[in-house]
Image 1: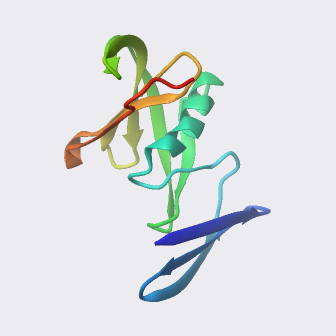
Image 2: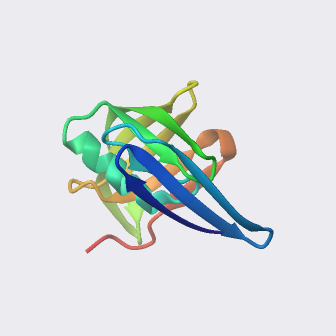
Length: 132
């Protein structure tokens, strides 16, 4: 699938192109909404930046699902995380989606994503090298 989108005023417009054709969706976007598509870990950087700016709750647009939800972000402390054969200190955030599903996000001191985990799906995405 190829997804493109744009925000016009308070609306988010998405075009999804796949082998079955083209689909267009449009819906309201809350102020300060972040685009995060399921299974695309690097987009979580924008969520981490909101947390570092002091946000505890962030509206999130999920374009493939055509919906917007709210995610609560809580600091779950620091821990060692192995990246590229080295153990580094990482800050663990707990992301709680509307409906109660929890996910884990490990970031460095600049908010860069080191690891993302979705326990309910047994999904883990981890960097193989440290960010520069």
